[in-house]
Figure 1: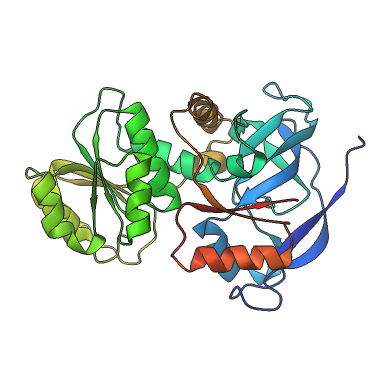
Figure 2: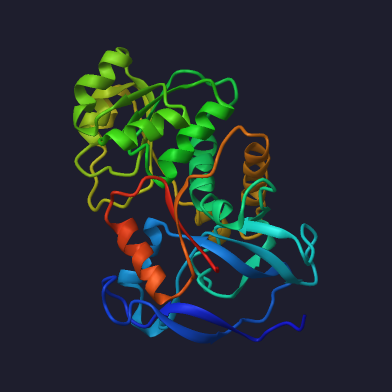
Length: 336
């Protein structure tokens, strides 16, 4: 096929709430020139993450129209001159990067360093649920907390039924020997985290009592997507020398309560690698490992809701569901 110079996309014309009339509109936008390591992907499916809500509601109006979307799965239709990892026709999945146009488009340019082969055993939709949360969970466990295949101890996964929490549980069970405690409040979310492999499930309002009953000497590691107001509780339930890895952005967070037990706090942002080390292929390697684990039956997709097609109305529906905070797993959209 001839390489297109534009693409149809769904974009936000102005920052604001999901129910605004210009939150999602169909547009035709130019494609940037292909970089030497770029893949041009025909997008077959995408999924929605909290970062989508954040960008949609607060991006610079001068950047409109803003094409959102990070997770994607699709087929390579063209490659840059220096591409060595993929070829035209390959089926791939990836999470993209925050400083380039997003995946809610027919075609998207993405650097091969942050792309993996799509799991052969999954549909495009089921594959699109995985990249961003898998990379975040993997980097949290192994790059930030420093776990290895020999690691034991205890890991507390807060919001275990969420997108990243669901992958933290699965990867911790598949690749380490830690005991996983997950928080979940509703009966269906508690069953979800048990099915993913959590050894113990506690209600998030009962951390101070339920976690010490399971780990009387304190948990060794905590994954935190909701840190505001929880630092003192984490300090109380965590072991001496324990560590938190957080992915949220609470303003004015005070981590001083961790000092008494020499505990540490780590931040995880999966966009750090592509933004600041663009030739680092660690995320390519992570996604390759994820695909291998899926195809071996050791982990599974977290897609729970699939919508179609990828158009303004369906994306508005997907964002509304995701922002409600009641979604278990991930909302996926397919081209149809």
